[in-house]
Image (tube, rainbow, N blue to C red; front, side, top):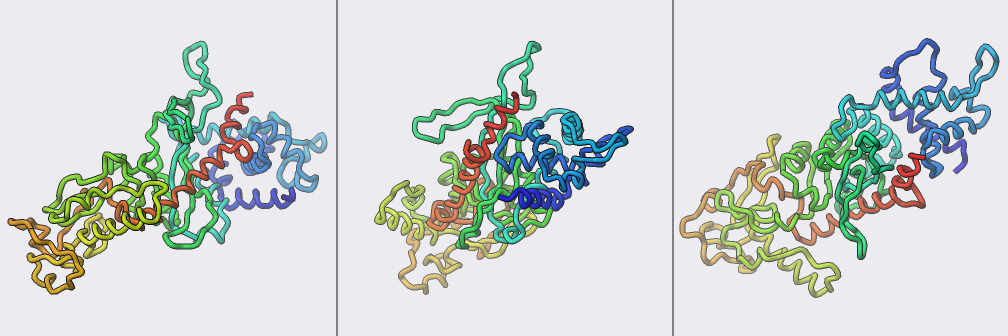
Length: 439
């Protein structure tokens, strides 16, 4: 890309984010005004990163001093002093950077960044999304990945050279790769994906969060998504794997539903199947089902990878049959998460002698031949109020594991592509930048 166009775009991102104006008041004022502003420092860092190089301060200094002659005075790289023109020095870059780090740092290490640092990261990332793409979707694939620290060696005093990092666990994703431990951080990213059934869109990173490995990633990202929604960004579907779905509901599912998120999740094997009852209805894979549902239908598992057409059709037919026995929504959830549901016979999906009107339905509907001898509440009331605590961990947008869920969940692969791109040595190479930064 043309150097002038690159500089113009990066200036636009920094200015649109407004972070320079937010940070500057947090920096101390010396006897002599600083030549290098936070705005110009951030532009210099982005110039180096845009060129695919690690953002070492020496590289930042060279990038700023290498700007066109007409750009240097405008950005404060070249200024008039009493003795004549003065070009920015490396020490001045180092000084402003140190002040910036101190302003964004936390007083006590808790494994997460400060609120100001997260605000700055959110604003810069949001400003990097082109305006035409901002309203393209309300759906996001969220995932975390491992980022190794530049060093695992201890100093003479026994502390690690990188005091913010900690030991974490990562799974081997490729053939022959084993699970292992690593020293570093967890990086979480929310990647833009198409809404259900919509056309493809650019898979852009909209939010990121970096935490030490002793911090559980999903709860740490809840606040980022809450702030994202509070800023006015539409937040609809959030697509995640079982690593998120298996968390305590209060740490992931419940706070996200409270801000209007529709979860699309793979369920952990320990969370699949029937997990108790509510008012007589069976809690199964995040839904409530008629107590007379044929047990074999509950044996349905996710479609196997590489399944042929016949196996897929048979699987989807069983999923459709199971859906007939599901209690359906009679109202949308209220502000507290309560909603009303009705039994499948009331909704006209099955024939049941306990619901006289349903027996007039066509014989193409399944019929319940042995209803409960002592009908529970779900069979005796036309509607049932369900609190958010029921199926709190497993409730989601689509029936699991239906074909609609399979198609919707397939969007999660965008998160894996984002993670791979970030650590690709041919592009961003975050881990390489971390390693080389110790030089």
